Amino acid sequence: MITPHATLRDSAVAPFRPTNWHRFKWIARSTWEVRTGCLLLALTAVRLVIISVTELSDTEAYYLTWSRFPDWSYYDHPPLVAWMMSATTIGSRSPFFVRIGSVLCSALFGFLVYRLAVRLFASARAGFLAVFVVSILPAFFFTSFLANPEGPLAPLWVLYLLLLLDLRHHDEPWRPLLVGAVIGVGFLAKYTALLAVPIAVLVVAFLPSARRWLRRPSFYLAGLVALFIASPVIFWNYQHHWPSVTLHLVERMPSASAGTFAANALHIVLAQVLLFHPLVFPGLLAMLGVTLYRARNDERYRFLGIASGPLLLFFFFVMVRACDAEPHWTMVGYVPLAVASGGWGDEQLGRASSLGKAYLLWLRWAVAFTSILATLYAVHVATPVIPRLLRDSAYNADADPINETLGWDRVRAVIAEESARLGPDAVVASDHNVLCGHIDAAIDDQPAVYCLSPRRTEFDFLGRRTPPSHVPVIYVDSARYPGDAAIALPHHSCVRAEDVELERGGRVLGRYRISECLPQNEVEL
Image 1 (tube, one colour):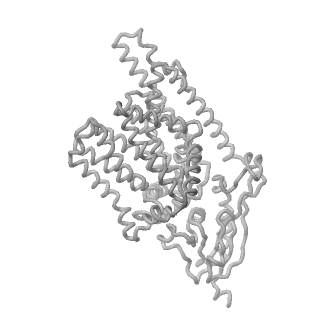
Image 2 (cartoon, one colour):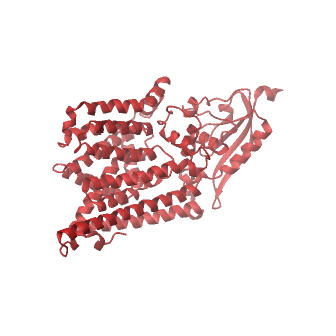
């Protein structure tokens, strides 16, 4: 916990001669470095415990399916998340090894956030505060241990900002090429890394100390470096007639009315408040205002403002337009604001100002609120107390991600029993991409899993869309993702084999329905 006497660095200046004062500054910096290291180690330990005791979510299992089929890219996202899983699950496909890559990325992300704040504000305390602020945001907490594309994107984005910042005071021609390389690798993690290109141009154009790069060829060659590294994704899309481009720029952007846009905007704001902490989110928006105000005369805040404001504005308009926007898209836009918060807070605490006291109070309330939520989350993971206490009208089982992780041992057992009875030619099929992915993860693709989703999914590109008409099929659907076996498998005759109920806290929270579908010619015989 930060205490006032620990943060008022200037209070000890008077008793020291200049030489001793320099020594005192080094000791203070070392102290905050140690505190940052302890914070990062503690957070990593918590994440390791979580990935050791919880099962995979639906989306994680879907990504795990990709890793079984190494490719240059995938339908929904670029390949880096799948490539990471392929490396970490060589020996085991348990949830721990599926997620360990994200945990390592989150530790690197925290370290790089610290380095960025220290580089900008020459204060280890500013670095600690920046890491502290970003660590209590729910969006960063959950993506720090769940397998997802944001896991590798986050440290790559901060590394990109650090390398971009180096262009202010260094003249080596290879530096922009390194920026381009990181952008290219970031593009392998998520398509939004493409936004790093206009941000880099804006930073170089509007920071006088970096503007000289506009006249140097290596700055433009950096774009070719990024394009070369991103070429596997481009090549894969070209081979398959640009499916990812169609998904993100056409299918996700249908025409809509003004009322729909207004409803989307309200939903986005509410989701941002929840995902980026009800107490911290208003502070981050206030920090955006401070950053833009100070950007007039301070290059540090101008850099952070350019790296944040345009991104958040772009994401807001895209999310209002999209039919299935996800609130965590904005994560990279808040990182510079967390860094700005660390620098501004360090300045106010150094002055022992009333704003510094308010800043400390804000952090304490945020930590208290986060601690309560974290305790409730731990209780909910470990016990069914919360669903048992809530009434049906106040609890939506389909919206509870914990329920995605439960009941798969029984589903696996029923599928194994049906597969043994139907013979070695039997396959498994379902109707929704994440349900298909979770089935695939649960049974380790034995038997092979097919996905009959009405919408195109990654299974289409894996050659796993439609099961052969001559083999028996074990068809699985659920209360959350309902399907109709008769419609999905018109060449088969299906009968219900068994239902697996998901019960927790004395309440049925879901149901998996497993059907046995035989080819019609076998049924006629």
